[in-house]
Length: 196
Image 1 (cartoon, rainbow, N blue to C red):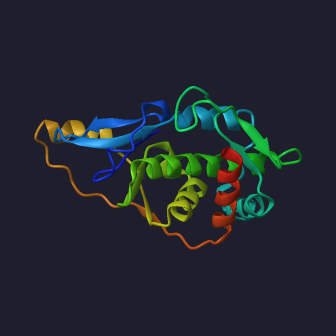
Image 2: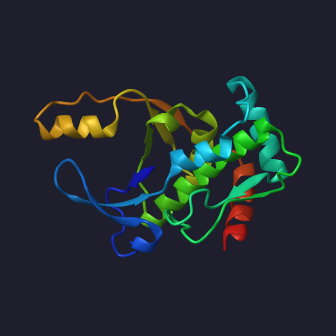
């Protein structure tokens, strides 16, 4: 997973935490951060039964209250916590559904950490597989305190290539997830306490 922060902070970039300057489609430097989000999610959810989407909000509420959480990193040696190894908290009796939802929330916390390291304060736009994950998107909106837009369809890579070739890219808008669930703040505070 790669995060970009147009107008973000170059001064705080730390290659040890996988933050660096990248280049946008117009050749401008942009602070960026990366971690193996898809790979970590696959590792943490391998073999789990995925709960129906309709049940996920209730499961998320339970995970948040019980502080069932994963701590970094499922893929050590990279990302914002390169020296840490995956461990679970309050998950000994967690169901597959609870672990799956906790993995979604973990991915959102890792993304929020990356955005924080970059000094990102603009719009949050998610594309790719996580754009179809409502638990992740709601969690990310609540952890960042900003609206999160989920854009489906073409990836930024193909859109960027189109821009470089002189194409006009139509403006697309996706589903918006808004912050407002206070349970995420306590969960995030506990997660940060356990990662330091």
